[in-house]
Image (cartoon, one colour):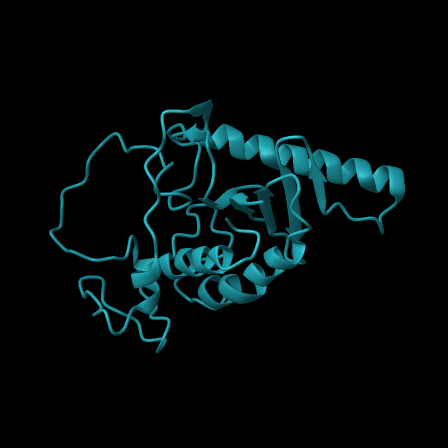
Length: 218
């Protein structure tokens, strides 16, 4: 058993975060304008115009990543935190290079398909079984999709091995743990901005550590 990938959608149906671990066929880079910035550094579209290099060496990808996890102190954009003050960044693993095998589908189109499947199945279940019935997962011969939806409209979607037990509690832990700590409670991360994804490196590192620590992760 293993875990393949994680998607997070906001209340406006936009994919605001993506992370994968054991995918053998990765999607292509998203089309220009089809993906919010900061959703995935590996699958973000390459900008057409290069901006001049400011020469600042910083582990933060945007000003939204400047909230220190240990002290809550804001760090200046040109200030590089020492190794003793940024333990999460030390444990973060860089995304693996895309293998030769690909789905042949740009990531922005894949994200729309995943959301479309969730929306269709959820509506079908409510019409057939009533409003009290909830859609939490479905399984195919190749994967199992798990869904956790918050009261604020955010949807956490995880793809895993088809034989994996329900990961709804894992998705809930991501929401009540790293998501609340590094996204909701971070004043530098605008919620529902429709302009940028969740590009907080502490959140990404915390999610990666949480998932890799699961017994089903192999």
